[in-house]
Length: 183
Image (cartoon, rainbow, N blue to C red; front, side, top):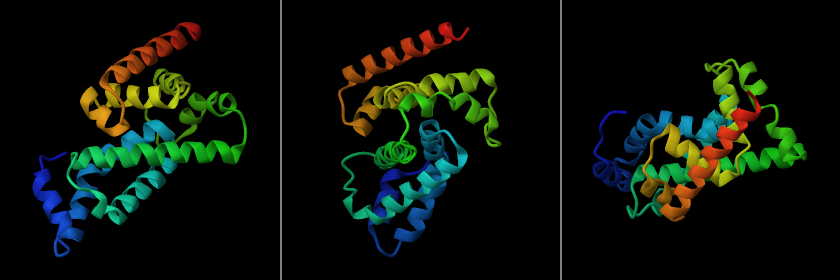
């Protein structure tokens, strides 16, 4: 991502004359990062594309709700996480099967996905991550893949840094145990 002046971008987003052009910059600058955050939650390329599109639609329609009390990127991540969680819950409800049934085939689903470029170990890691509770999965993904600070994750998930650290360490332990069991 290129270095952008977020304050200037926020000013442009609040001005009707520059809003559309500024939002194009938002999509260009944050689109890929948000895609990968969403993809790690919903897992498939097509679903991630749909969710990211919804994220940008929601961001566009709620621009007036952004008041610069947090960073623009944090606000976008919060929308992406919430949209991803909602998507996963809707999908589980539509399938109306148990969580274990949905999550047990994650590695197989990923290996069959034409857009998945990882190996079997990466697919197994994604399977282990998919078995984590929602919050642990979010914290692990943001910390491990996005290398976010706990303070940033705290703003996105609205929880304390201490709770996030505990969630991350529990998630790492569960993932490690998963690999030991499947060795």
